[in-house]
Length: 189
Image (tube, rainbow, N blue to C red; front, side):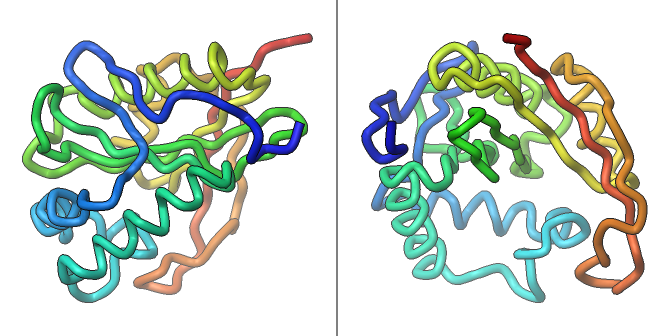
């Protein structure tokens, strides 16, 4: 089946979160979370450049993200504190291979909500969504080998360490070579 013809929900809930595709109008809430977290994001996220984006750029990004979600090219998900419009982080299913199906979960947390288990909760929920709703056979988490907090999320969510890719990337700020850790969950056929 062509990916664009796949029907599945745009949102679901965990104990404390509403996890859903970005929608037009989410730019201001996303921007607020980005601004609260920008310094921390700059260390790990190549898209976190010198300055936090203006609200208009965040709104453009959510609209593009929603379009890509509808086309099933990338399933970006915003993490809202349940019952509010407060963005506690962002995640999603990326680097999709619908032929397997295989997905990679990425994530970041609003610094105001760090250390409270929201990202682990989201990753567990998104992993269930990938396997139970999307029929995933493989879900990966990749992170910089120095990003201990990100690796800890993968381990807490029950992902198995598979490999370290040595000299896999150059750090977007320092230009130094870095290693990438790969964690995965799989379903055997």
